[in-house]
Length: 73
Image 1 (tube, rainbow, N blue to C red):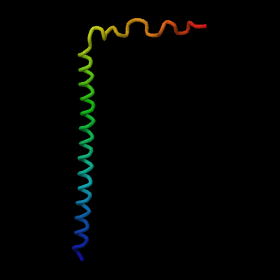
Image 2 (cartoon, rainbow, N blue to C red; image 1 turned 45 degrees about the vertical axis):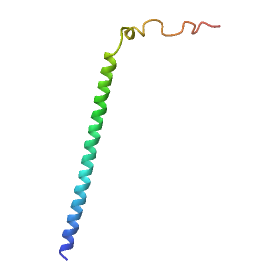
Image 3 (cartoon, rainbow, N blue to C red; image 1 turned 30 degrees about the horizontal axis):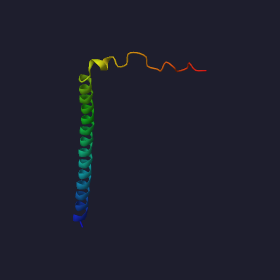
Image 4 (cartoon, one colour; image 1 turned 90 degrees about the vertical axis):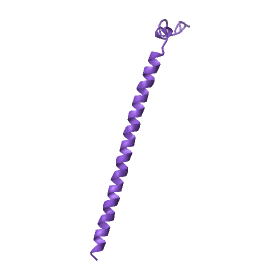
């Protein structure tokens, strides 16, 4: 009968260790994915910034709203 508690404790410890290992690897994977998303977004923003033409710098110049707005009867 002394073998049963040892077997149960060993099995429970293995299960707990396995669960913690899975949670740890999942956390590492999520962290890598988050860093990849942030780095990818930064690279994309820099690419878009460097590809602008001189016309893009002045695209917002001028009148933004329609001149007829609010001039009716």
